Length: 181
Image (cartoon, rainbow, N blue to C red; front, side, top):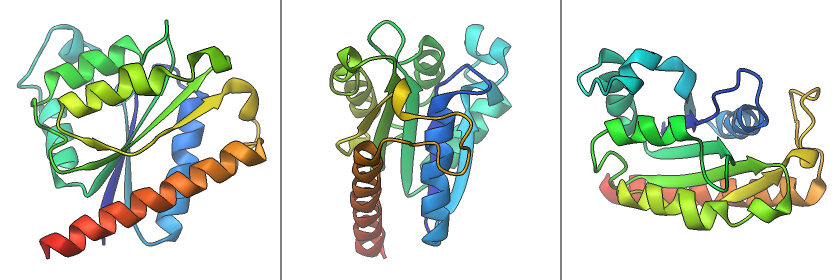
């Protein structure tokens, strides 16, 4: 069974990003994958802001990611990029923490004006950590209904795009796993 990590960069307790990640995790779980959801909120703020590279929480996160077959990283768009707390957290992890990992970037934002934030901010960051990024999916806030927890994605087109990206993600994860075995 493959292990997939869902990493949320949203500092908000009730975020659209988390809802999309949870939906993706549910779909992957139905396909037999083991899912672990980690949020920036799960890491003690003191560890992040005081640069505690030796923090037990950061060591545990590093081991989780290194042991995973794939990682889905989600973030809302803040000022045309991922959240600062996600960047601060990733800066504390080993430089090659995503080496050999298939990574699916997901971003949520208020308007189509931030569509390229995946291409120009998140994917380069994931690449710097040696991750192999898939295409990624961008969601506008109006395409997500926070009241519909089971399937919060109310736009049929973006929902199909996510399902297609999850298919490619799974295909790549399985191909790499089979190659290693």
